[in-house]
Length: 159
View 1: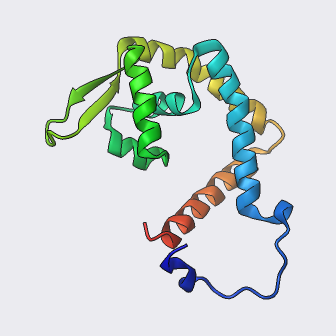
View 2: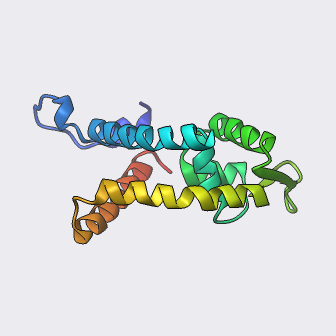
């Protein structure tokens, strides 16, 4: 756990009930949503979750693999494997980085842009279906709270 454990406040005698433990619930919910959507990407488009995440990030602009790791919270190996698969399918291209000769910039190809344009409405439809039972104010609050949890996790990990 490292040195961050010493910085945590003491907790009163409390039992850990897994179904009430927020990190567990977030993980289960995230995995359930990812599996649901991944089936559609895999079945219809032959993309893994990391490959789709990579494409979605690159649709916003070219990035280095290091920047993608930071943006997506995926590890280097996962990003590298996803990128290689997408390069092989000619969905993304690697180009030398102007400022850093050791790294490459990744960008969607025209084929990749067309595939992203085909998948994006499906992704948005899944999101709408998942959020259909929530009021817009609840969705906005959930996004704010998730942002705060991400920031707290970054602070606790020393990022």
